[in-house]
Image (cartoon, rainbow, N blue to C red):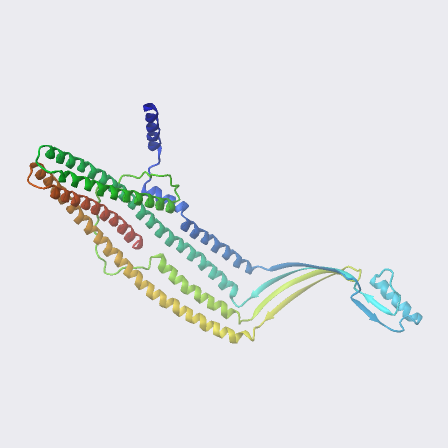
Length: 444
């Protein structure tokens, strides 16, 4: 039995040693390749490229083929000519007509019938010369669509990678809190041993031992909540990065300290370099091009082409061809188009209004990111000092309790302050990393 248990332990240890250690860089790279939102944005770029290629084909001739055939139960043409067969001249003329049309076994009666069957086929090619500028402007609009899709990839990738980093440090921070809980349990072991020794010597009552046990129960409850948080945060990290979730993740150890940077408040936060600003500008350009497309519907349309075909309706092959040109001038659409143009003018005005509003909001967002970063830096420094004070306070309280000059309640209170300070310091460092990433991303 002992050998079996030992084998299982060794197998688990070997698996753990061979397990891949996730780093922040590896998670970010995996998210770039597997995250659904990023991949969807990349597909949108490919879709926009195909739209651009579709519109580009409008520059070239439009070629089409057609074919037609029929077979009628009764001839399509049946003309009654009374007295046609009553004279030799009429009968002879009718025979000559049927011979010319190559009609087999004609019905020499007073009915002239034809077109019982027939086939035709043809091809045409039409080259647009001027379509009111719609082809050129349509290509420009499709190009803007590609640029907008590429900018959206930047926005999606930035937001997702920021969420990946936040989640990564959240998981790492929870692991750090788990290590803190383990240290707390070790401290409680020391406190319990001291209390039991004092109780055996008659220095304290049973209440001190009971207080330690209650504290253990409280820590056990928090430990369960902590483990649940680790599982959920780990699954979220795997979902964002596309990494399969297989239980406990192995991350690089959380840094013991953070070297915080100092950021100087800028007089003005510029947002012209952000992809969102480019998207707003593209939105205005797109609306302007849509207006030009609408205007193009009222302009003359000019094109040239060729057409050729084959037909056989009278049992005789016929080939023909022609060159053609067309000019189309819309008349009744002008009234409707005038209202469409006014609609586009309003949309352009609305897009510019939204641009001014969102640019102002982005400037406030940049300043907010700066102030949150500096607040996070201040909190890291303050909580680090508070943790050092809590550690020293606990050390003195433990010495005083062992010397019999303080109570168990005071010692446990110092212990609770130490746990609180440690967790607050970990949370402050996580917040600092998230704030730093956000500030750097939107102020590149």
